[in-house]
Length: 316
Ligand SMILES: Nc1nc2c(c(=O)[nH]1)N[C@H]1C(S)=C(S)[C@@H](COP(=O)(O)O)O[C@H]1N2
Ligand SMILES: [Mo]
Picture 1 (cartoon, protein in one colour):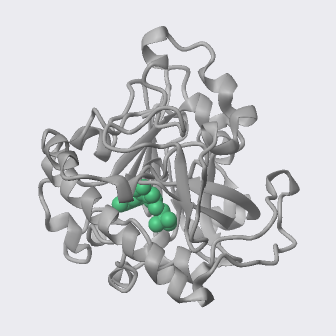
Picture 2 (spheres, rainbow, N blue to C red):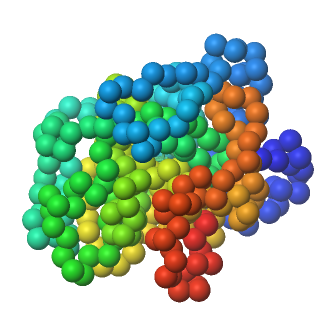
């Protein structure tokens, strides 16, 4: 991140990009500066240790320190509740009991699952993953949940299914951000079926050994640790198997800035800022960003056979 070096000429560059998007991402830049300052004043919010539970999948262990739980659950992106990071109180309005998830599209067995039944049916495990937001902040989080590939057997995708499209709830009465009609609500994201089969692709229903808080995407959110955070869609109500590539909310708003693949790469800058470094929340320092956020060995095969043209778009 080169926030301190930002000069006024960045503004004119920003004005040529999507206006509403810029407005919100700029808010972030302001708040990140404040966060650095605040954290150095409050050491209690520093990077912390956490004891993994007996559900830990040892293939996905990372050593501590982990992101401080309070920080990871109060500094969140959830535009349905507003464009600031400080939306955790507002998100308490979301009613997450009696939540069901509809799975439809190109599958042999279309189904609607009650979230609690789905959790019981599949069972939960714990995984510790790195997480990297496109804005330049990063975390290390112990998630609870299950791999995305576990739902494939339950619905049996058709031969023609190439993509999974995920959708968040739409309810402007409880989510004031959804009254801002310049966003193409509901929040949508997508991945390829091949990516869904990769064991890293994860559905989180909990974090830090507890149910996931509303503001982090209760009761079910995607976690794709090798991609920028906006791909990890929160509070999913629907999963559709499709032939065509789905277009996500951010891609619709600003296609030059946020694409379908959005794989983490320190060497491919965002049009408005560098991606070479990241700030670990609470750690008050920058570290180098890694290709595929450190998961190259797990995922690079997914992209080996793409066309030259697609390969150019892999990292945004
Ligand atoms: N429905 C929904 N999902 C979302 C978002 C959002 O605004 N709405 N923000 C995304 C972005 S930009 C990031 S970085 C992560 C943040 O996850 P966290 O707040 O749990 O750290 O959620 C992603 N999922
Ligand atoms: Mo993000």
